[in-house]
Image (tube, rainbow, N blue to C red; front, side):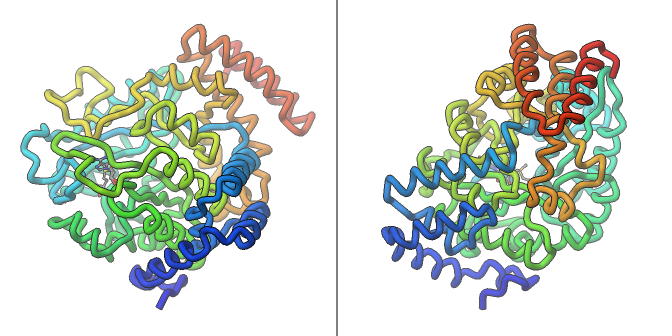
Length: 468
Ligand code: SAM
């Protein structure tokens, strides 16, 4: 039985319901009357169910698909404006006891050099990241209860928040680590972690078990119910994702939306973010051996359909994707972007870089943060280094209700401008600085209230005078 309120993973992401959804979508993929109705429903910006969204994903009618893309763009602009939140991954450790067949961290891989950063090395990495201008990090690590303990993570988070260097500090630390217990999630919350990110990899249990033949990650139920435990432990910002390429994309899409519906039904708050990673070649992993890879057009359609189905959920794209793919999906729904990323343990600082290549996967976008920022500005996006919401405790359902009512735009836009101005003063190249300042001058006019506009203009003046 499919039960959206159930705490049991088997019930809330029910295999039978996914199969019925796929059949329903297949039967209705040319039903233009229904598709038009669903597009109209999505236009109300209150989202779609997994069944409805799956029909739109399956639709092959060119005209209707163009309408879906156009609507995704409109919804993206309405909810997120032209702001793009910037972040960087920080790889703490690649020790791992799992046997995931698609990941080079798998235990049997003897060619990859294993490394765990010490607290001193973390500090060096963080200073290198701060010197680039980053304010928001996503911690990454393999699963290894001996090396990568909860105490290690807690200490690392404390180290990171504690580093005050030159012009600022890391203001938000998100974390992507293996599924854990309610008590551990509570400890992470107490350590003021931001979003807890965990990719489902695949929602197909049978396939999941084949892809995770050994190690604790092989327990599908424990992995799938991780977000329930995280919520129970008080982490109200959780980030979902699947690794596209492992399973048929329509299956994953339905599972992802069912997971989001479940969180909303059971906890009153949907996922804070959805990531859309695609499988890449890596050390001893050949992505072409996995037969469910998706092309760029399908990828763009998935992003657009997610955008119109869960308008209030942020979407993240990493440097797994090329500049051109990133450019395309930014328009369709992506609201957070990494820049200048290194997926090697210790990759940001020469002193901490490990010998040999310990990177987790091949990057397609290898530009520096400054190049990414400049590129965004040239496309009229505002790269945002803002983390103000979290400082003010606007997380979880409070954040969602603000976002759903559209109010968050009133404070996000000015904050994005001010944090961009800080970035331009402290870290940008002369060209990026000149282009950024031009954009900021233009964007001030788009601050709705006159009073806020005046305050922002004054703050920008102060920042320019280095008087922050
Ligand atoms: N240990 C954590 C876990 O068990 O979820 C974090 C894993 S890893 C540091 C972060 C993510 O990288 C994984 O969840 C997986 O989706 C992704 N990943 C693994 N191998 C990959 C590959 N070959 N290409 C692209 N992404 C990959």
